[in-house]
Length: 421
Image (cartoon, rainbow, N blue to C red):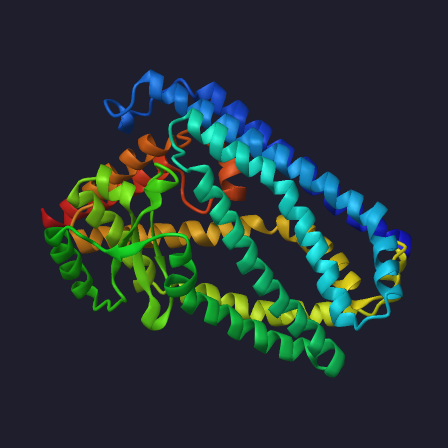
């Protein structure tokens, strides 16, 4: 059984590595083959120079991500087969409470992951993004962000690990249920607090300054009866020139956020169209739907972990002493490798949500033309990939490809014209 478990892990791990490489390779090859073609809808919007820049940016980003994944995989294997058995034995030999053992265990591995990721983040922010004219971040902001992120991550890790270990220790037969209750409540609380407590630690959020735009935004929200904490602009321009908008929070803390870079580069109609799209996510209850899926799914997952956490072959397969925290680490490796192959399911659901939000945007504004113009500008400003491979899209993309999305919006306009005529 131990050999079978080890073989299963190696198959999943190697399969993920190989499949990621295949997807990246065919996506880059497809882009290079098609990358000289300016799509019809982008004629007059971008030129060959811009298109070439889009291709280069996509390729370099993809290769950087692949290198980071490769290093992460090497580190994971080194930890698993070289460090884990002796590290667990050393922790058990300390003769301290196993909750403290667990905190040290996960703290060390979190630190290793964080340290490994720093060089890639530095290269991304200060080399790659600057090369293509996006990054505006300073060393001071980068270091401050890093310190704040470490503090927040450490606090959350201490809370979650302590709670998890406490449930296992004091409620050995029902810990999976109480852990589910706790983490569900914690997730909801974090969703509720993120927009008003965590996000403002990194950025300045303030109400939209343009009074005319604010009036039009309020009129748009009144159409659907949306009451939020407000529509805010965020000073993301101090880090990057990328443009974006998003919907965040739940209950009384829900808010719509627009990047200051978006407000500076888009027309009023385009901004309203993007805003209408975000309202579409609220109207279609996409955040709630995701929660309604994740909550029962996490219950099933925790019960599965409960069933196998005390199974000796799991530990014997890797030569590790039977300890709860080591078991959780091993199970997480299996689940992350297996879960990778389920990515297309989540991606397909998210693409459906995006199409629904686009339809709502068209209905609210009465036309899809501003949204189409906004997408074209977003594509140009963010150097988006206009020619992704369909298989890569199917597996990874949370949004429909830009050309497909624009064509979908155009059909709405045609349908509206047919209705009126």
